Each structure stands twice: as C-alpha cells, then as structure tokens.
Length: 152
Image (cartoon, rainbow, N blue to C red; front, side, top):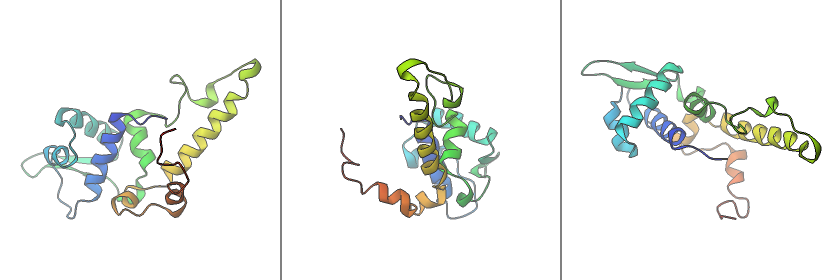
C-alpha cells in the first residue's frame, strides 16, 4: 500500500489543526510552514477537506481553517478518503467490484482481507490519538512486531 503525498500532507495538516491550542482558525501559511508542505498544494488539499466536511474555513484577517468536528471523531481514514478516495483499490477499482478466474481467483479474498486490515487500523485511529502521541494499544503493538521497521 502506498500513502500518496496528498494523503500524507492532508493528515499532517489535519493534525496541525487538531493540535491547535485555541479555537482560532489557522492560516494556510502557518500550517504549510509548520508542516513543510508546499503552500499551493496545501490550498487544494484544504479545499477538498472543506468540501468533504472535515474542516471549516473563515475568510478575512482573522480567517483560516479549523476542524469541523472534534479531533476525537475524525479518523485518519476519514482524511485519506476525502483527499484520495478509497483506502484500498486495485487498478482504481474497489476489491468487491473485481473478478478473477483460474488460479487468480484467490486474489479477491486476499485483496478483501488487506482492505479489512487497512480499514481496521486507519478507522480505529483518530486525529486526537496521533496528535497526543497515544495510538490505540492494538495499533501500537503492531510497531513492536519484529521487522516492522525494517525494509524487506
């Protein structure tokens, strides 16, 4: 599975908003600078997140962006889906819409299992969890698996 730059930037921007101490909106420039995200690219991402109902925007001198809901109620999966679409696809097709024949038939349940595991992890972790550096225990345990940090 690949996490696109767009998804990575969106999650980082959302985390910057989640970590904001006051209720004042954050300007795009501040988010871009804090997370080292190209400003123009971030503007498009934040617009997608606004259209997807994850952030609210406010115009004017005191304007900027803030989360539309509490960080506890926004999963990492929510953010990725808004900017990149389905969490797992094969050639741009969702696994349930695929069909294989012959020896490749067993690929479909494999892709479904992969999608299920990705969903379980990304839907089970909120922006608040990551912003507080407190991953759920089952997710944190996966980082302790031998070779988890090693390239195969």
